[in-house]
Picture 1 (tube, one colour):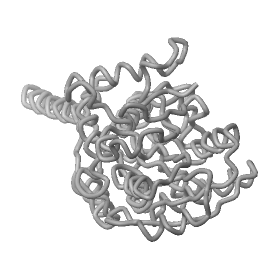
Picture 2 (tube, one colour):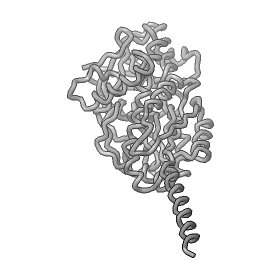
Picture 3 (tube, rainbow, N blue to C red):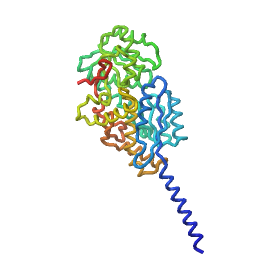
Picture 4 (cartoon, one colour):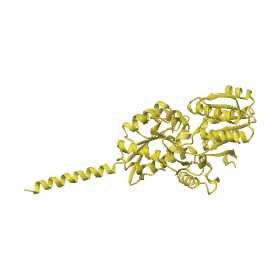
Length: 386
């Protein structure tokens, strides 16, 4: 009389064990929306290649990465974010490559309570902190940190007047705000404030207006290869002053497109770009060299780009948070996603390829001055300035 109930109980227990095993085997899914085509492809392509270097297993859990291209288009970035969350059931988002696309994704991340790690630079992505931005983190250095470095260099070299030209989008606007702040503090006069589109074929009109102000220096606030256009135009017009760029140009594609016209450019960059030139005492050097070695082993010597390291840093940040988040819930659950957000916010002294991050409830970037160095372009290569 007891055999049948026992068999049923045994079968039920087996089914439950199998279901539990299946639940434990559920992978952590990370959705990635980056710009592998379009004007920002020189940012997105090394990011795509760097995603392939991210860990496939963390804390005993399989990790899957689902990568979509947004072409730098804000509408596409939003559609990608919704698809990744609603259809692919991702636990976190990485992206996008550009500031406008990243800003567009914030609403989706907040609405779906899914943590997002941006690969774009503007501080507006995480500032001012509010209920929506509480779900958003970023791994590139904030533009205000880099603007301070440019202002310090200009002041030290007696620059008194500057002409500014930036993208006619959130990236250029953010830099205009930051540079105006820095210029006021350093006693520097801005003699021109111009804009251009990432897809423009000519900026002759803007450059002529800039040159009319006879500036000691020019600051170009762009990213990727489109940022070479104003500089090449200045060279054609025989401008002899110092040209500064932002960390948005720090890849070999910019050097290739700019050629001799970008020699002598001065800019702040993340330390990864010149890791081999850093002193051994620098805490970032070993991690940055590890990334460079892995990236170039897969893609060839000299192929590394600063933008790819941002994707690698996003993976480092998520990998550090996953073990903590697993205590709050299983992958695919709201508890796990909330745990990821809280664990990233709680990171303290996390060494990455571009800096050492200490996050807080009000700072979702966490980098300090160790995340920047000043370089120049010399002989078609990046050279660390003293």
